[in-house]
Picture (cartoon, rainbow, N blue to C red):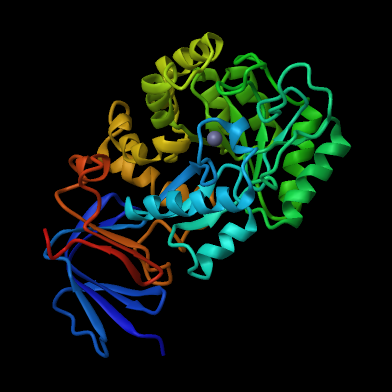
Length: 416
Ligand SMILES: [Zn+2]
């Protein structure tokens, strides 16, 4: 039998109810949680025990919109790096995420099965990775990175696809093939570009991308492989078409209105806002050499970010934690917790980064909850995160302890 560990003296955050359970202990067998029991209950055969000192223990956090290969904010130059260099930089990004308490991340395109396996085999320390492979984009869409005037169909790159290169597909047949290629390469979810974007130079923000038939084909192919599609979309029109075509999660969604949120609710879709990246880019975009067109698009989505959360919350759309940070801005991941407090309670924000994210990813019972059978992914934090979230949002603080699959990757409990 695998070694038994005990986290004693714990105040357990029950992500399902949003309540704290004081005087608890968590029994861990190998990589999984065996039980959460009362402090008074004797537990046999414990090989190792961690004293949480009465502090709050959270399920490992989930960030449902990251790009672990985005070692640079400049995606064109990233595509011209060799895959070995992109991978080496990704290992740093993964390490940083795990240290910040993210034990699972959903990659919104870029990462491949090699990176996923590198983490699984312990070659890199990082969160468990759910990969999308290449983002699927129409010609001229958000993941078509060819500069204007370039006629070659394939984007000139040296990164072996690790640089966030789009799989360009036009027409139902090509879209099906592009999705099937991602499935063949081990995708856990399919990323499609259903509307304009900020970082792409040629597509209007409010535009829609792909025909409804193409969107349906992508969702159908994903479902055929027991996967689902996540769609990049900002405008009410782009979001509505994507959701009606069967997309499970809308990424960003900054420009949604009430009517759009109601369509999302009716179709059981999730919203994954990514406020952190707009704040980071608003701070740094001009210095990074972004064009005035791109900065103008950025300003519009940034201004509407928090409002989209309020609208989605009011209509009962499940909201999931995401950040979408690029390059050197990754350490700002925690500010997403602070930003969301403008529209949600601390408990709701914690749920968005645990149990609601797990539901979106069809990992209920496995992730995002401290309960028997789930992965032993947990954090010990300072203070009361049901009241305020500075222990997660302040980069100087962070969790005191991070455990993933029963293994401790960070322990500052002694110093605390
Ligand atoms: Zn993204």
